[in-house]
Each structure stands twice: as C-alpha cells, then as structure tokens.
Image 1 (tube, rainbow, N blue to C red):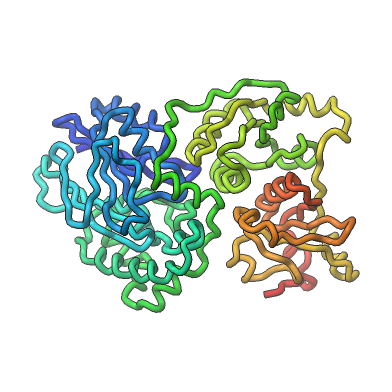
Image 2: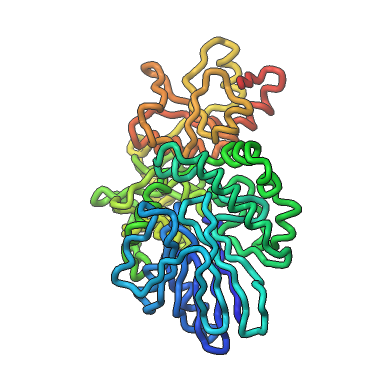
Length: 478
C-alpha cells in the first residue's frame, strides 16, 4: 500500500493518494481542480487512478473529482447522506457510487469503510482505511475530511454564514457533537488524515502538522474533549470562527451542481503595462504595498501572494471577469493555480513587476491612482483634538470584540461586499480610515473600496501600531 499527501500551502488543503502497489490501482480523496499534480504523482509510482472520492461538498475550493473522472474514467465515490439539497447533481454521466454510512468498497487490496460524520456539513462522510493486502484486519487510518483536524473539528456554521442557509448552525453543532462522540470509540492507534491544516478557514484552531492519531486527539483536542458537554461544545464550536471569504457560497453551489471542466491551466499573454486593462480586464497587482500605494492603475486590486490571495481576490473578483496580473515571473505558476482552484479561470494577461515599475516611473503622477496612509500617532492626535474620522475595522469579529477604536465600524475584509450598505460613508471631503491588525488586510480592502468609488486612507501598522504608539492614550472600546 502506498499513501501520499498532496498539500496546497496556500489553501492549507490536503488531498490524499492511496494506491495498491500489487494491482497498480489508486484512489485520490478530496482532489483540487488542477489534476496534473495527482496524475504525475501516480505515474511516478507506477499507479493508475481508478477511483476518486469526496468527503463532502467543499466550500473553500473547487473539487477536482469531476475533472479526474472525465480525464481517467475513474469511478466517483461521494456521500448519499444529508438529504436532496446536498447530493451531488453532476454524476449522471459518470461511473459513480453514492455511499451511505456503513458501506464498504475496495481499491485492490485496500478496504474503505464509509462513516457518516455530519456536523461540518449534513452529508459529510469519512473513510476508514484497512490494508487487507498487508494482512491487517483492523483499520490503520481515517480519512477525516473536514470532520476531525489536528487539534480541532470542522466548523458547523458554514452552511449558514457562507452559503446563506438560515437557522441551521446550532443543529449542525449538535450533529457534530454526536459525530465526535462516535469518533472517540475508534481505537487510539488509528491515524487521522485530515483535508486541512493550519491556515484554513474551515476551522479556528487547526494544527500545522499533517496528521495525527485518535489517541492523540482524544488527549489534546479541546473540541473533542468538550463533546460530552453539549452546551459547552456548541458554544465553543460557534464562537470565534473566522469570517468566511465571500467566494465560499459559490464554491458550495458549483461543487454540488458541477464544476466546469478546466482542461488546462490558463496561459496568459505577457503584455505591456498600458495593455493590462485592455478590454476591461480586472488588474490584480502583487507589487509591494508601498509601491502600489504610491501609484497604480485605477481600479486595481492589491494583494499578497499565497494564502492571502485566495481569501481576498476570491472575495473581490467575480468568475466572469477577465483578469490581468502584475507579479514576479517566479510567482506566475503559483498564482495561476491559486486562481483556478477558486474558479477564477479568465486570466488572459500579465506583466512583470520590473516592467511595470519602469513604466510607472515615466508616467505623470496624475494618471495613476494613489492611496494615502495615516500613522497611529497622527490618528491619536485627531482623537485628542476631537476630530475623529470615520473608521472601518476590517478584522474578524472576535478581534474587534477584544478591543477596537472608539466609534469604529466592523466589516471583515473578506465580507466587505456581502452587503455594501454596511460600508460607512464619511462626511463630504473626508476619507474613510481603514484599519486591521497590522495594515495588510486593510491595504487590500482599501484597494477594493477605492475601485468602488470610496475615498480611503490606510492605517499604517493597524491596531498593533495604535496600541504601541498610544500606551495610556489608546482608546480601546470593547
């Protein structure tokens, strides 16, 4: 038996390839949409992908199950639990099985037992893995999806907070508690192979190690330890969860109804800076923030590469928009994959940072957009003078509740446009001060708000700078 994790550092997402080396068959569990990474891995180990499985309908990325099935003819294994609203609707033209709890299937000499583990979602299943070909008669691992993570459990609120299904998260938390108590009946030696690690928005306290065991989680997983105290468990699971990016609702719908075929990664054309906005392209600018603030193409969205990009760009850009990038050549492949994994496929142009900076230096400043910044000290002085600007705090709700500037409004940066009427409007001639913890989330939010016509000012250093500079003068409303 061969077991390999394929980990996406940006989304903190783990797919698993399990193969029977005797028969050459392999299955991929919870794949992403750019399937070349799984095909290449299987080929290197002389395996052919005959099956693909999902633990649930994902919210944070587009599943590659359909892509793999159409590319290889693989049989698809999905959940048949959870009711009609959460059954996969794209299966008719594919060899597939909709599993119920207790079902079993085999890949060569490897047995998979399906457990219905609702809570994170109603249909969620996990797969117990037993290496029959290796002589085992007990399971060695649980592919736990978004049910059990290292150090945490999958959040039960996403159907309500991200997908808009009202009034379900408390019942989901109760279901999760039942699933957790059943999980604790498994032997301590069973390995836990989760679908996410630290950095994922699918939980609030995920560990950074790739896998665990039932015994270790029994001893040290706070959420699991609370599962016998129903009220405390529900309160813990529904409190302090990160605000889901706006694109999560779209992922749920597309993964349920059918992910569009990707085929291959986008192949954007290298263009000059002045051609980036041709045809109304949305520019995603990955230059250092100071360079962006000093001068950028009007309407551009600023982001960092990596994990930050998916959450921000996915919340500010629609899939039908044609996109152009300003980035380092070395980052282009990573960014392309990051975009298609959340369904932003229409990347048609790009320009290097060096080319853009050389061009920017030759342009009249008035042809470029800029964003002002305000220091914590200057803002303190405004407070003391009674000249307090309109402030938008774009941190998570739990961060805001722990301490914030007096009079500030709160909208997490990934939820800015969930309801545009909630964005504060400053007095005529005044700018909206945008603030986060360290100045990064607020910077990206400033670019998105400016695109929508708002006059914005980024608070340099954010709440950290305010507290450090203010000492006794810090206005920490709670």
